[in-house]
Each structure stands twice: as structure tokens, then as C-alpha cells.
Length: 485
Image (tube, rainbow, N blue to C red):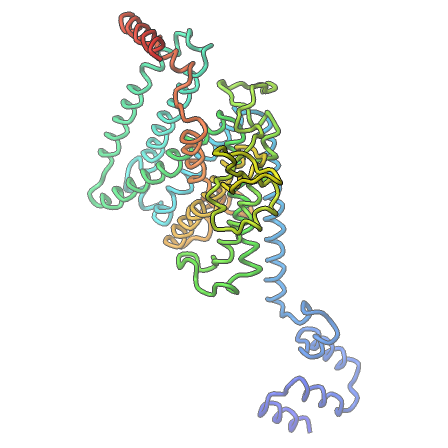
């Protein structure tokens, strides 16, 4: 009989229902065989029985359970280290401007390290044995770039601080910074050419081009973060938060509505990105940006610019810039041309203007006047209008920095640029969208906020740099200009 049962099982695999019926018809088993059967049932449970008695987790195989636990652990790790990064960022920000600049410099070092090794990491041992000073020349190019950009930034800062104009070392450094930078550049250029090897010259030249591109992406763009910090922490903090908000809300919208409204692929380079995430993230970024700008404008710590780097952060007091003070904003009257007048009159803060006897004034009930136009006057902070412009850029353009980073990782077959931040990867994985945003903020600030790029203090420095005869000529022309205007 046992032989017959085994042959029948081999001939036709039993379904969960047939196994249950066969167990019910079989004679009573010994305790040992019962324990063995129980053990077998625990290791390979019947899908129907497990789903009826326990939750979905119990229906998983051992590998599926481990995979699920691994996902949960990754989420927990990501959240914990994300919170630690936020806390650390806030601590450094409130420590003072000099510490924030130091943090940006550290980030640049890590970014350069991660990006340049992408191309040579797979051939590092071969390259280091065959090419002399391979990594040394790369870091030499980085140091030359840092020396020039940060030296230029410090000189610009000192020129706008009248207290440093009388310092002799300042005058010498301002005169010889360009010369010393060019000397370092020439030396590194010669060393790079000398280290070229015939068998590896194509790889070395490709790597040199890649190094230059990395320097443009990192040092070239992040240089302007320093200027944003000194112009007021608002111009540093607000753009950073815009990118973070856009990233989070694009993920939420993509996960909740992805490919339901727009089934097509958003970007072939990043197949997981969706139109819903891109559009939804942009809408939420505009809303958050409007209210976030109004909130940050309340704090002088955010709005006051500084002209010196101090280890001990003073309490900032300044005359609040007009962009952070509320005022009346008049909407262009052309926006009402396509809206029925009856509907417009029901809107809040609407003032209707009429023509009475050739004069245009607010309409008065009972007077005979012809309708001329509508005006809507509302109290807003000018900075909120700037915030809308920055939020649009953070939604439409900045994400493509992340798409470029995805393309680089896909090209070289890596998941993350590094593992320095558990759950998040490398510094580049967190900063990929911040490069363009920092540059956009600096351009926007100089184009629309402070259109005069030369301050009075810097103009005074330039005047002191002139020879005596040219100083006299400048004063004469300035006096003539004032008389005529």
C-alpha cells in the first residue's frame, strides 16, 4: 500500500486540496510521524490554509520574508539618516555663516572624489601601476580651481568690507591673486602633460576631459553658493528647501498616481519617473514656496546680509530689505479682459474704476459713469513673487540635474556614487539637483533683486586703487555729473 501511494504521488503532483483530503483519509499516525508532518507543514505551508488563518506575511517563503524585512530596514535606515542630516544641517546653519561655508567646501571635496572615480574605479590598480601621479594630478586640478574660486570669493567679500581696506596684506593679495592662480595653473598643466603615457594616452585624455567637466559641475557652480550665503541665509536656505520639497512631493505623487493620468514614459533615461510625479511635484513646490518665503522673511537671521566671516556669530541686525517687507501689489488690468464683469465684481479686493467727466476714479454707486477698468490690490511680500520664480525653476529645470546623475550611474553600471550616507548613497546622490538651483539663485538675485552689482563700499575700494591723477579726474567727472543731474 505505501508503495502504491508513493507511485501515485510521483505520477500526479498533489494540489493543496488533494493533500488535505489524503491526510483526512489516511489512518492514524504515530506521534513521531505527526511531529514530522507538522514540521513539514510549518516549513512549506499550504497557501489556502495560511491565507485563511494568518496574514499575507505568513504566506511568504523564507526568501520573500528576508526581502521584505530588508526593504523595511532600508526604509528605516533612510529615514533615520535623513533626519540626522536635517538636524546636522540646522545645527551648522545656526552656528554661523563661516561654518556653513566650511560645510559647502567639504561637500565640494566629497563630490569631486565621488565623480572622478566613476571612470577609473574599475581600472584603478592597472592605472596606478602604469601611470605616474594619476590621482595626484586630478587633485592638483581640483586645488587650483579651489584656490582661484575661493580666493576670488574672499577678495570680493573683503572689497565690500570697508574695515579691511586699510590692511596691507589685503592690498597685496588683491593684486597678486590672479598671478598666483595662473602660476599654479601653468605648473599643473605641465605636470599633466609630462605624465602622459603612450599606451594609456587616450584614457588619460578622456579622464582629463572628465575632470574638467566635474570641476565645472562642482566648483564652478557651487562657488555661487558662497555668495548666496553672504547675501543672506534666505538665498541659501530657501532654494535648498525648494529642491527637497520638489523631490519629496514628486516621489509621493508618482507613487500614488503614477501612470494613471499619463501612461506614457516621462523620461527613457529614468524609467521610474512619471509625468504625474513631475507635474504634481511642481504644483506642490509652488504652493510650499509661496508660504515658506513669507515665513522665512520674518527672521533677520535669514534676511540680513553679512560682509565678514566671523567664528563667533553675532546677533544680526540690519535695515530690512524692501523685498522682505509687505506692500501693495496691483495685478495687471489686462488679466480681467477675458472674465465677465459680473464675476469680477464678486472677487475680493477688487476696485472698479469709472470715467466721470473725463476723469478716472473709483466708481461710486449712483453716479453716472462709464466703466473703465478693474484693479485688484493685495498685500504681499515682494520676496514671495521672487519665490514663485525660483519655485518654477526648481520644478522644471533642477530635476534634470538628478536625471543627469541617473544617466551617469546607468552608463557606468553603479547604483550609488558612494556609500558614505547609509540609506542614501553618496553626496552626489543627495546634491545632484542642487547645482543648477544654486546657480539660478545667484543669477536671479543679481538680475532682479540687486540689479546694481557694485556696492558703494566696493566702489570706494576701486577709487582707492586708482592713481592720484585718475582719482582727481574721477572726482571732477562725478562733480560735473551731479551738477547736470
